[in-house]
Image 1 (cartoon, rainbow, N blue to C red):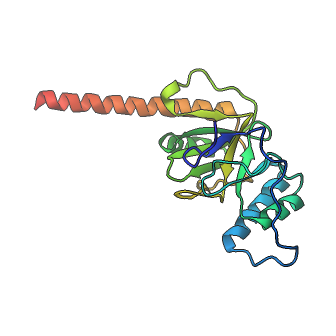
Image 2: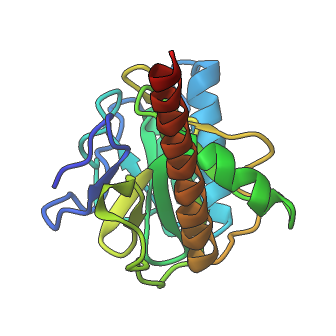
Image 3: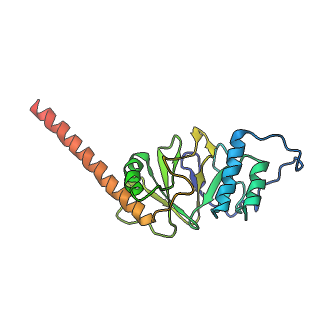
Length: 218
């Protein structure tokens, strides 16, 4: 299933090129880069330095990886993202996984997690989706209903990272979060999402009950 700007994730296709095409400009003769291009490049270098398996992605559609090989070191990341202002994707299932959920759930989950310190949470514009970055390897808990909107992105998938620009806006960090924040355990976030979902559904049921009672008494 290809990634898209509406989902901010995708599957890593085996047909991806080994490395991005090089800029036709010779080294030392490139035109000055924009501020946003510089932010993308610097972010890519920071992610590579942290050991995150980043990948260049086509923008603003965010529906295709430029290549399927991660830069092996920060210097290579610097070269690739100096050549072109690629979007930044990250391969999940290695250093991190992502628990994707509706922002309405995320707003309830985040405060509970932040009681133990800042966590890394990514917001994708227009989609109403938050991505909680978590430790890799855990399965999706079976208690989460299929219609909960909570998805676990692990091995074989990629997600978008800030400050990638997609149709509708820029992928960004939520609140105090960022790449230096701790990664909570995947199960911790999934169980927090389940509790938040139960709370939302209980509130909705109470609202329906109060509305129905009001109609009867009137």
